[in-house]
Structure formats: C-alpha cells, structure tokens
Image (cartoon, rainbow, N blue to C red; front, side):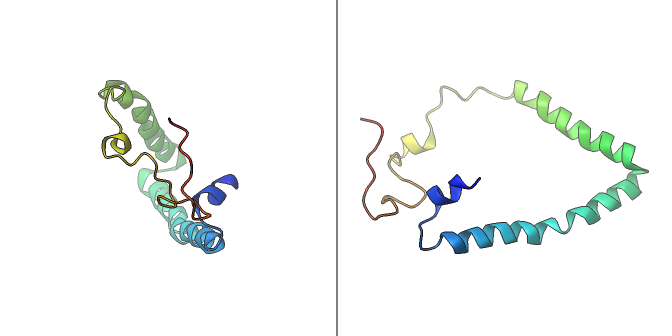
Length: 103
C-alpha cells in the first residue's frame, strides 16, 4: 500500500491527498457497525445475516462465468490514443514527459 501514493501523487500534494483518502474512508466507515447491528436484529441473528451476506459472495463467484468474454475488445485507452497518459497527466512528477515502455 505504501508504494502506490508515491506513484499516484506528486510530492507537493502527496501528504494532503493521503490525508483526504484515509480520513474519507473513516468518515464513511462509521455507519457500517450500525448497519450490521440492524441487519442482525432484522434477520433474526448472526447466523441468518451471515448466510444472506455469504450468498451474495457465492453469487459473485458464479455470475462471472456467464458474462461475455472481453479479451478481444480494444481497450478504451488504446482506442482513444491515451496510451502515454499517467495519473499525473501527460507529464511525470518532475515535469518531464516519461518515456513509453512501448516502441
């Protein structure tokens, strides 16, 4: 996890960006213990709630086998000519256009 922010954000905004990301997750996460308690109460116990939530994961394992294959499709970045862009834009963190690994 620690290597991603260095690649995604420029050094000038990295600390602020990480603070926003991590604290936004905390701001959203406070509601989930309340939802879990309501689900356990509504569904009649921990076992019933776990069975229903587990079935969602089971459905997630089965459904992808019936979805269409996307291997032969052209990626959006190649189709629109966005091949050289990075999360920082067309220029790298130092302001210099990075070399493409593709010839």
